Length: 357
Ligand SMILES: [Zn+2]
Image (cartoon, rainbow, N blue to C red):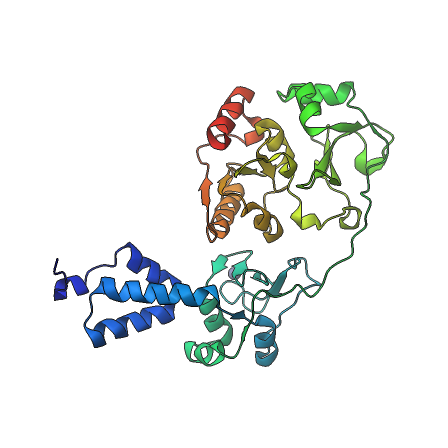
């Protein structure tokens, strides 16, 4: 097959070609140069460049963002702001909010950038933005590389025993009524999720709630959460103070101890997990954070099933984009007309059967 006519050379990129385009601007430049200088077919040039790239990437050093920030007057922090998380550096996002907010995170393990507001960015694009020009980025590129992986410089000491709300007791009549009214089987929930309850003696913050232990992957209780029996009580969901939780509160994923196998369904709230059952986890809010996402990327199949409202969908999309950087499949489950927790039990069981089993 002779396929090196000028027409082919100029044709739209095929899939491999697109891949090259998306990986590395430097590669794109080299690719153009190679085709022009050596008059090679696109396919040959790409194959060679891809091999080169992949070989290089295996042992590629990563960006030393701390040093880059220090030398260029860019504020880079690892603590002291609510966007900070263990294993991440934060800086102001030059894409969506220059000069404020510390939205842009840099993973010390993965070497990737992710902004809380505008999503993931390639390292190269980010360095250009941070330094103001491609020329400046090119100059800095070689200088700020370091061996991977970084070691997290700070390890916070957390308390060893988990705090429990005062006055805990078994589910009482009112707790069971509440659950039945919402179409749950209290005994099934008791068996799978070990729900407990508080009555009037647990103080203003914790009285009259259904209390759910939150377990880590190893099955150890790391925190307790509470759902009020009345929708008038604010907040409806309550978690203890950060200092009363034995792990980083940002890393909590309700239901993670029940996920077996390589698939996980990600939802917003504990009520959704109770409806969908084992194999689903809740981010405990509409938003999610990188500490949680890092745990989710270990699963080969990730199904994101946020509430159908716009903020739920927006966060779901951002999470999908983030997870999409890693191997495995990520899928957003669309077409829900209600929160997963409000689904009919039979319908929920059917969905989980299709997704997880
Ligand atoms: Zn941003």
